[in-house]
Image 1: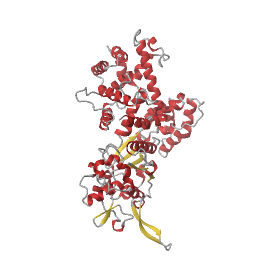
Image 2: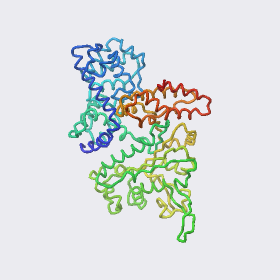
Image 3: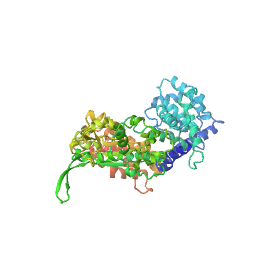
Image 4: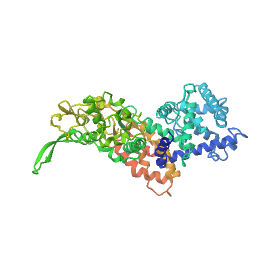
Length: 561
């Protein structure tokens, strides 16, 4: 248990600190501020300026207001994002004037236990300002590191039960309180115990690690193994798809094949669709090939996806052959490692060797088989029905049960065919393949996805992430951090504009690699980014509309004077 958690920590945190350090620094700063407030409140009250001495709020005009805004109102407060849970400005101001507000806030700061948490929750509900569990949970999580930053109860439960199912934390007894607060303390306590001795871990990194386990392990592709990531240009859809798949692969390798020479580069393929891409390119087709007399002859050749499936499906193919021969009566998804151990002599290929060396024979075979990732960039730019053909069926029914005859079945032989069933060769998409498409929603060819194809994919919108950008800028150059707020204001204005709208927002990648001198002021960098990247993009959006005058309006919202 302990070693696997340490390995997960290495992959999710230690190897990615450059990506997470901005969040970490803000988290630690706000937590330290609250520690200082806890001490100061012993001799002062919440609204006194003296209470904020020694904190990051001490020099602002109204430290009490600034602190309360950070604690329960701001989009991101260093602990977590508020997500879809929003408190209106009017309700925030009403809260600060309401009876008992100072008392419940002071109580969660001074003694952030379950009673204080319940007190804040009850007080909040009595204000008739709506139900905001994420904001309430975020407030208590800011005041104690015994609670993690995973403040959305649904998301927390998902990773909590995944940790238990994987035996990474002990079982949580049904006799224990079943609320978010107690389960969260339980998870953090046991993860902390397991990570003892890890030199670079602390309470903040451990809390962040729990969230990263939700994002990258317990949650990814949870509904389907084919996903389309869509959104505005510059949101990093393809880049993050590659990074996340590599992370998933390394985590799989650590658990099942740590000492073996599996190479991620052999488990991923990235292609880009375009209008002339065809079924023959993707699956199979007749192509000219030189014979032994150097004469061009048409012969059946596999496309890139079919070859990838044949490589990824070696294990499933072997098991299917045994099933067809009547030597195995269990379904693929029901097989455990001890089932295939008994078939050692039948499943003897080199690719099975590492399987027999896995010590925990109760693991499912489907978990132990390595994942393969096929990324299609600009997936909407091809004529998809023509490219996929009969794969529409295979996308819905994975594995050997979804095997079908292709257009060129009668031409397949042992070198091109995937599996021979009866008197002909058939094709199937192995269950260990993740098919990930990316697309920009402003591309007019987005309509190439008909309903039948749409329902076979899980659709994940990737929006400009100003919270992530804020953390990144804090690390890159803290004096540029307000560029994230500038981008947020610009995108708000673009979304409100009927001529453009949500799909035309500017992605955070446009402000990511700022290769300017760090001596430049934020105003100078803002102007440079606008001139180099954003203004040309907006002009392109508005070309031919007769409304190029909107660019000056957008410039103002971005902070260009």
